[in-house]
Length: 229
Image (cartoon, rainbow, N blue to C red; front, side, top):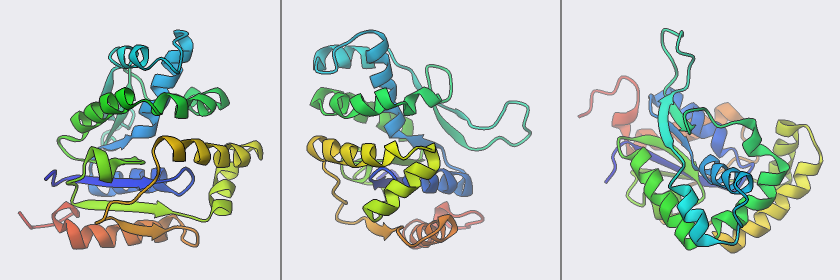
């Protein structure tokens, strides 16, 4: 059992990144966006002209990436936010959200060897506790996590959120295509003991409230001010 691990899985646009970040800040745990790790490998492959179909080359390239946890706040801030994922000594860049990365990341992630290497890196990051989000955190990366959340939302709601985030109508169609590709690579299936949260009609505060209620039930010692051992 990894007692301080909260696993959040869900499709793009379901709200898992927003929830994971807020939970991490509320509970004082590191925040790990595993999708950024796959995107970072994809970016490295494109830069190094590594074929996204070459599994062995991608695994070797993965070994050159440095995934660490560092404070999210600026160094001059007296109380920086909890630690977050950094890649090669820097926070994840906006380049990871580019259309080119979006078009290739599913191909990179479909390789079993890549996924095995990623799982090892993710387990190392979450060893001391974290709020970790992705597609298979509760089923494959940390199946022993005490808190597992699985976020869902209506397709039109997810697409609308992506349009609002990125300011382009094109991302709506891209999201549906990403759903199709990801379903072939790593089908979204909640862990048997995951709590499914439909965020279609929930705002950010509402989703956070539901999640904190689950934490209070399953891992109350993680809550601020808890006196439990």
